[in-house]
Length: 56
Image 1 (cartoon, rainbow, N blue to C red):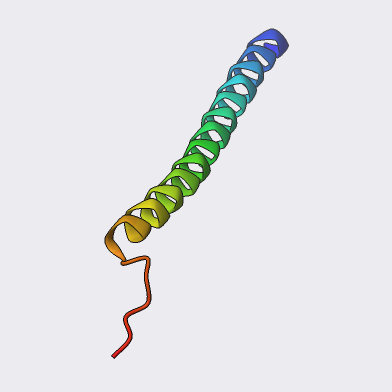
Image 2 (cartoon, rainbow, N blue to C red):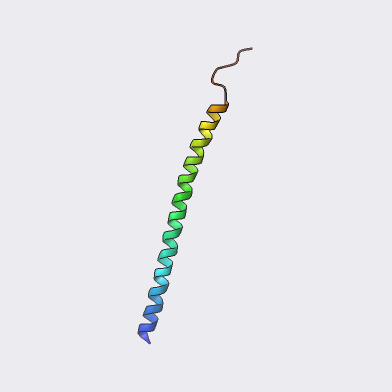
């Protein structure tokens, strides 16, 4: 009886650890993509905006 409970607890702990690890990987990847998106936005804004100052 006790070995069955221990086995179930071990399976649930392993599942919880896997879920938390996957969540950590997802959060890290979203942060990396956010940094990349900001870099691309800055590059495209520089490419579209004129460099010189217009004097009227």
